[in-house]
Structures are given as structure tokens and as C-alpha cells.
Length: 241
Length: 76
Image (cartoon, rainbow over all chains, first blue to last red; front, side, top):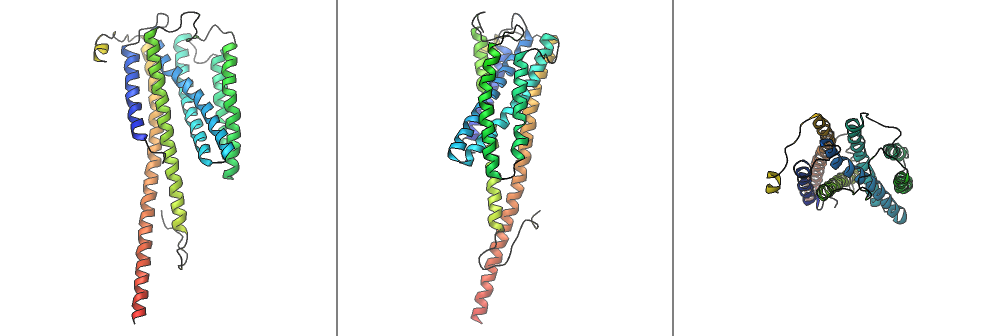
């Protein structure tokens, strides 16, 4: 069910990534201030935006789950958060590389944007032990949804708090006070954002398809494990290796 | 796109190049590791499905053989 449309989505993702990389390295002009190192921006910022929106989307799916009790929404919520955590790792690593190249340090603790993202990331890193510490599947899904909603609401609040904080270190790329991005850079950035968002969506569909297939296999195993009518026990688990 | 690429500036491979390459390679490695993990899961599921199909087949054959025996004994 989840695998429907996965192939065209994958093809669109590959095409979008190829177009994005072409624009980054062959079309977008070099930044007057940072030079070639600014090319990291086209990877780092779309990853960060996608990861943060993914956390919020996970919270929205969790609301659907709490309202309906349908476990499929919990699966969507879990996979969105899982993928955003993976993207979050990429954000932190690419950000550190950019910081080292630009500022000479791998990490700067007095920069609110960096530290706030780390806090959000660490908060979501606790989602896994929290979720899997609960054995009962119903309670696990419900508690995880409550966590996802609360944490999802924290993400935009955190973002706004950082925007309101006065910092001179981390660049405000989309601010209009200093002119913002020129057209060619903005186009490249938007294509990169679309490519990364498509990748996120494709990987989510892939993960959901795998989880759904795994669940169907378990159900099939249970059905086959049940003794047939009028026959003795036919437990297959120990025999099937 | 081709005319766009033809008019593109040459890549400056100075000190910044290794950092930019590092950032993009890290991202690529993360995606490759994820896809490899998913491929492993897919292989496991495929194996499990094969085993279950084999088991279902043997069970169906066993049931068919049992009903044949019952028919034979009823004839006798």
C-alpha cells in the first residue's frame, strides 16, 4: 500500500538532485564574501529546513493518531521523526564543516542557531529510548504521539526565539535588510530545497513500505503458525531458520 | 541546461574545496549507509517470505496427501 508511487517519486528525486547539484556547481555565482565555501549553504540549509519541518509534520501525524487511534498515523509520525533525526545528523556535520571553514572552529557554543538546533536534535534523540522503553504497543504509540506533539510544538517556538535573539555571527540569509539572496542563488537554493524535500519524502515512503511489508510478513507467519482445522500443532518458528 | 553548463565558471579548487567536498561526501555517505541498511532489511524480508512460501506449500501438499489417504481408506 505504501509502496504505491515510490518508483516515480524516486526518479523525480534523482532528477531533482542532479539538477540541484548542477545548479550549485555550474550556475550559482560565487559568494562575494565567503567564496566557494558558501556552496555548503545549498546543502546545509535545505537539510535543516526539511529536518525541522519534518519534526513538525511528525507532530501533526501524532495529533491525527491521538484523535483517531489509527496506528497508521503513528507509523507516519515515527517515520517522519526518524528521517528528520537522520537529516539532523547531516545538518550538524555539514554545519560543523562550514563553521570550521568560515569561523575556524568546529563548534561555537555562544551561537544560538547552532545550540538551539543541537537542543532540538538531542530532544528528538530521546524519542527512541522513550518509545521503546514501553512494551505495550498501544501505550507505546500513545505516549510517543504525546511526545511528538509536545516536541513538534517546541520546534517553531525555538525557531522564533532564535530569530528574535540578536546575533551577529550566524548570517541571516533570507533577511531583506541587506538585500537577501540574488535571483540566481535563490533559484539554486529553491531547487536544492525541493530536491532535499523530495529525498526526505522518498526515504519516508521507502521506510513505511519496508515496515508495512515486515508487518504483513509477521501476520502471515502468525496465520501459518496457527494449527489448521482438524490438524495438530504446526508451529513453524523453530523449524524455519 | 547544456548552454547553462557551457557558460558556467570554472570550479576554484583552493582551500575551500576540501571542506565543500567533505560536506557533500558526508551527506552522500549518510544516504548510502541508510540505503544499505534498508537493502539488508529487504533481503531479510525476502528470505523470510521464501521460507514462509515454502512452508505454506509443504503444508498444502501435506493436507492434500492426507485427504488422498482418507479417500483411499474410505474406498477400502
